[in-house]
Length: 540
Image 1 (tube, rainbow, N blue to C red):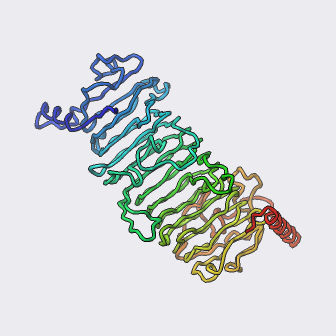
Image 2 (cartoon, rainbow, N blue to C red):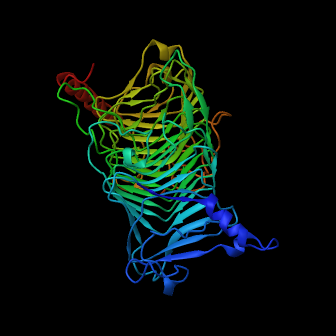
Image 3 (cartoon, helix red, strand yellow):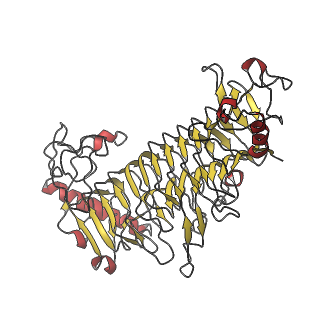
């Protein structure tokens, strides 16, 4: 049974003792807990009188209250809290002591959460480590009211049920069941009637945990049901920045039912490791992807590296899912994943206004890409991306939009897959560069040439800048539905309207002209790849 800390009884006690002319913040206590040198007989109100554990009934929570765990210690914590600070004076759970000591470790051995924040406002958790080998990290939920201003900052999550469960984790019943570092509300869980707004997750790390941050608003109805209606209440102003994910069997971040969410400057390495092989009959066991939108709008994932995903069914970098609209992936470095992109519109309703721009994909080449699956995409914008050593790209459900200024270099034997629907679609394919594959018939006027990249080291992103004199420099399209960006993928000022994710005037290097002999050689490589795919039964 979790220890339950309620703000309401504590507030009654505190306010009864206060002078009418003194604010509550003047009486906000700071509690010190020291698992090595503390004593539960102490007052807990100073470093020299620290408690040893959290097992006390004397807590007073008002705006400005602090609970500080001494660095270097290990603490059993399994707490449900309903408390509220203010924007100016949040309630703080953090650390104290020698900065050279390890962060205090807050843990539970049970199948439960370390922290369960119910109907809380302006609580900050910072500078601690959280582990739960049989449980989960933090659950933030709104049962009776909207939650506002929660901040999780510089928290290290590690060792949480990280193994292949051979199915997707449940998203509806807390961090322990979802094997997650942080979960907000729950997808289709019971009792979640209120959103979590102004949530900030900053500077955190997640390692050896099955799942990272699963952020859900409120949804009624299933987007996959074409006969049903879907009602959403979106989390507003969610920010995830400067976070690191590594060695995880499931997702890093799910932006679910959010409006105006931003995920920026994050790194995701070796996630989605579960389900790495198809079943014996060739079917897919389950699906996971590292960072993706589910039923969100007006949200962005940017300036992020995603690499090493292994889930055979998904493991893509770009994923607009479950009726996500007007969302954007930009400035993404994707490499060595199963695929770069596979979108999944549901319920007979096409998704609208989604954008992919200034991204670099290298060796995401095991499974095919899909610009639009399911119900398709309208007003879809895909421009100034560089796709290197990519597999087949399906574009059959892109009904309107623009695909322009991109470099597509395919594995030998791979190409754009399309059908008659593409030939009649209102999607403009123009000013692209194709290499190692023929131009699709709806883009015959684009270039078919070897990209003039600056280097050959595929592990160095600077290899994918363009050499001075490249035909791709200045060959990009300018149009109202292509937003003019200030910076390119490499973080440099855009000074030239190029094809690909590089926006400069070219770097120094030897320009290797694409000759007739090169064209013939590459054509043979393409045909050899087609033959190999045919022999292996992969072509149809």
